[in-house]
Image (cartoon, rainbow, N blue to C red; front, top):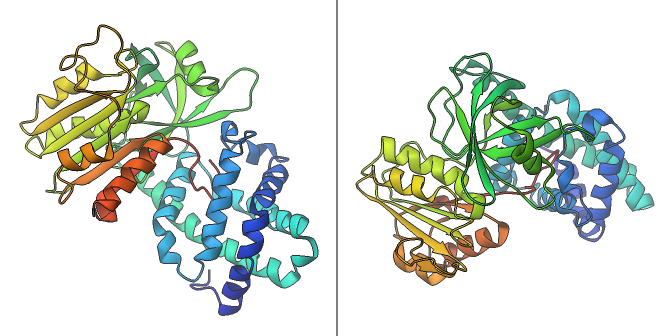
Length: 403
């Protein structure tokens, strides 16, 4: 693999940025159409993101445009590359899958741009694609190797039995998972996720990521899943993953996790089901760093949708410096302030800045895109360095291969 792209290739790729801005989404949709003719490649993808709204195609379009725009400054893309590599590892994407994607991408560029996609342009994009693909392949190999050699580690899909199911709220259930083979499991980093291969009758294999909602113990994992309206995977889990059911699970992955060694205060901020990685972080802090100043701030609709409230408060009581603050956007009749929740309404920018140590804390944020966007923007405007703002969202990310 060449270590750098030549100047001619960089110039040709950057020259296509206006065309990508105008036709990128059409190119990506054509690329997916070509890839999905191969069932093996189609089944790597989360089909729920290939919808009429085009959530995954739009995310991929943005990622390709970002790559073309920054191809002469790839260091700016390092965080995105790590996120993509981790997601690929969860989905068990292997080097042999990359040629199919490259062929589909170049074919789509030619089909959409027509004569404007000269042989020079296609050659440049081919070189640029494989340059990035080889970076991802190398990083993914290192992660696969780490997973295999870790205590309790494995590669590929491992059978786990549902040992316990707990209803956490009107829309969220927790599933405690133990490996069928009885062996240990990788001690995940608090904040990481598991990827599941689900066999849903009448559908191709369904792959989904779910954050681990408990601290590492080397024996089991817990996930907490919200039943989404029209959610194929979440609905199947809620209805069919009863105690004793066996699920195929890939090793823990993800670049969003609690810093293992940090003396800075921690602010855990979540909205809705975004609490799942935060609970894992809170449990980890309470058991390993109980004197670390920590704020756990959670927002949800009301008492009925507020998952794991009692558990969170019990965990927080183990730490001498942990504060828990709950917001209910629309409290139900009969809810009592100070008992069922701390504040009515949403978590405002002003409240967040005034009530957390913005000048020194690490912020970990998880929730829907609007929630994340508002929180990250508020913290940035308040002068919090980007290195202290860590976030995860649920939905299609900036994948360059699959999601």
